[in-house]
Length: 109
View 1 (cartoon, rainbow, N blue to C red):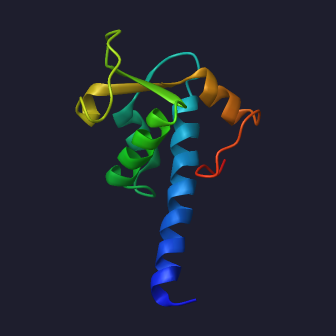
View 2: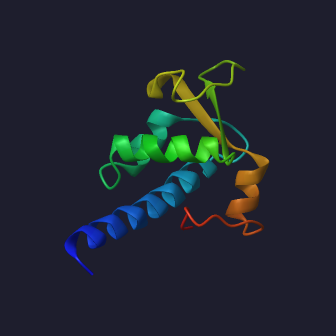
View 3: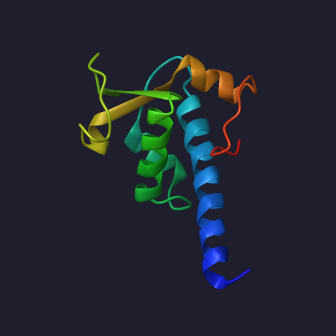
């Protein structure tokens, strides 16, 4: 395997691990929303802000987490709001994933 293929495989493996770590961090408070900056604080320096944002985006788009503007009922996305203005909570699909009822090839739990 050449160097470029090794780098690409490492990037893919990191993405899967990061997705699992972010999902578990959001799950800590299970029944309530957790602010994204709290998730960031819990996972840094092992996972950087850009990688956490990448995972939040994937997990939202895949339907595993719900995002809303802090302290409101207004649902949002990273594309529409600033990272520091958002909080996350697992969706029913995210709870199923955490509990092994569904799987995702882009998430290592």
